[in-house]
View (cartoon, rainbow, N blue to C red):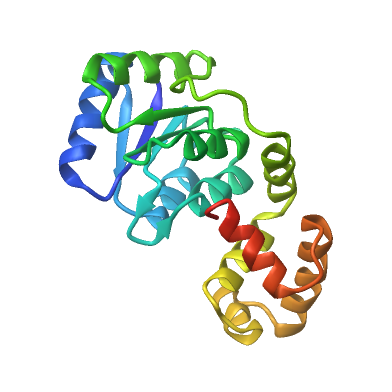
Length: 204
């Protein structure tokens, strides 16, 4: 039996996604989540065959949620479901490892088709053309970060100090500094400002 996690902070849209999932995968176990923290808890409690993830949750916005999930649970296929349908957003999600991208404006039959395709191991997204080589390279650099390093980069982007990030993650400030050296090297940057600009450029 398929185990599918539906993550959206709007109850009405979660209900619409549940309806699409029920048609695409009859009998599937469906877990509804309203935040990234709930998604992490659901994935920690058991393997999932698919995660339908909104880009905007109460505790996560942009590509940060996708990047963290891909880092923590690389085996779980993630299909982004978003009201942001710009070609650049779609390409960015796919280059960061999304298995599919479903516009929220899609009709129910299209959502069912998309969910079925991703469950079958096929990708599904609107036709938005190929990603730029530079975009793909940047996504590959982000993908090389460990889950802890992604969280540290997110902390930098939020303007938090090393000691605040250390407190958030329950580690020492020295550990954060050591991680930052590795983050800068992997991203090909030299300081916090450049790392933040890079993260903002892909909406991390």
